[in-house]
Length: 359
Figure (cartoon, one colour):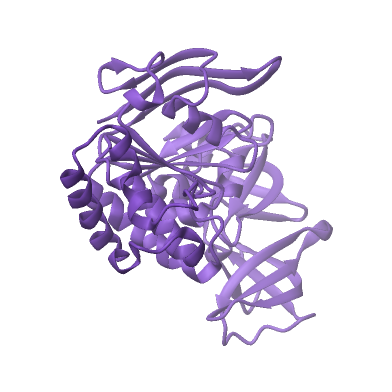
């Protein structure tokens, strides 16, 4: 079932939290609401669930407006950050609680609980209580309690944030598999862009209550709509440099770097910010038309790669990602070459992508 949000607004008193949110989450897709703390993503999720009132706008599940429907009438299931398990109940009773409240026959409850427990590989834990489980096991029970109801829409509010780093990596893959098994529309909230990139069919990047960009992980990574999206998506983060457009080139201090062909349509003298990811920079042996001279100011080993920080003109710094066996040393004089096909150009005043506007 698809979810449609039409001009959704939310304010707490005089403080606006969400501003004119217009989104469509296609049926059976995994959609992530991504953004920093305080951007409104959890509030939006709670409004979809019916746990938070809407100040203005409409929410539709399929063709049905659900603004005035109570949460129990929306056929949704929600997994919270805190898991919200009943500590006095066994895993079996936690899993079947929602069905028992709906007066489902006991045989159906038992069958559903056993089925979901097998899928989640927690069938050997059914007679334990939450206090006897690890964090990952409690997370599976919380997921199972939502899955057992076969909801049309599955809502998750940062469900992995309480897990250690290794378990989070494992659970990302499992959550994606659970979504495919459940065959329901999933709306997932996180501030972790790596989670969003690895699990989602679509990502809504949010900032200060406004949707900055909505698209596939590939689109928000390779074609960021503005400076915020460009800086928020990608690890290590994108490098930004300020300068002017001059005859299809980017002028910074004494250097003039060539830019993608589309920039030839930009008015000369426009103040811009160019962005280039560390992976799209490389070191060359001598200065050239695509290179900037600098001095290595920091070397960080990331495992199979190194992140090299280079100080260039006017005390600006850029990061370059290279192989771990690259012989680059602190204090070394270097030349950094730009892959011009991978450069992003943003209007300094509006912060919007110049290239995306011209495509």
